[in-house]
Image (cartoon, rainbow, N blue to C red; front, side, top):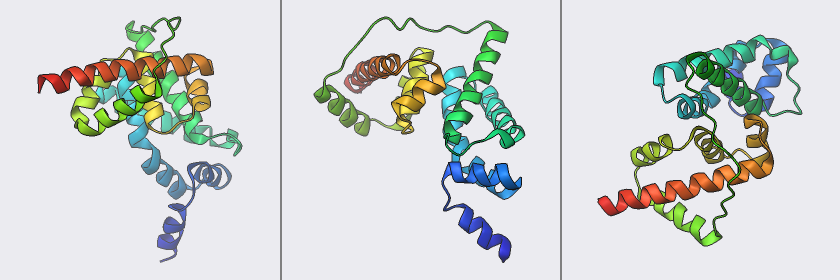
Length: 193
């Protein structure tokens, strides 16, 4: 009964609070709760970098192991999700470097989308099923895929910039370009239906 009560109270804690419990007490239940909360979002992020389900699962697992191994270094003033996404991104890039398939697109092009275009994109996304969206995201260039995935998971621009190692403006440009490309791809899909 005591275990159930502790597990139930863990589910009410935020991710950073859970990590603080893990860091201070080596609490495996808190770490499991953190894993349950973040692993599927982290998997999507890694998958969109690698486009390989099995390797994405492996890297998510490795990222959580690294997080646990370095738990004593955690400071509550930092978002655990930012730290975890950075670990996973670095592991993904290490893997890509190892197999020599990494390509990072040029960020010099600036694209600005009007607010009405964004709301049109959001309406369009609501009309299209998730498989089509996943397919559309998967064909984006790597950095756009990563930025838009983090944005879709409600990461702030500053968090995305920190995770991807880019400036806030570069992240804004990446997200805008990704939204524009997604809008075009999804509109083409809708026309072909």
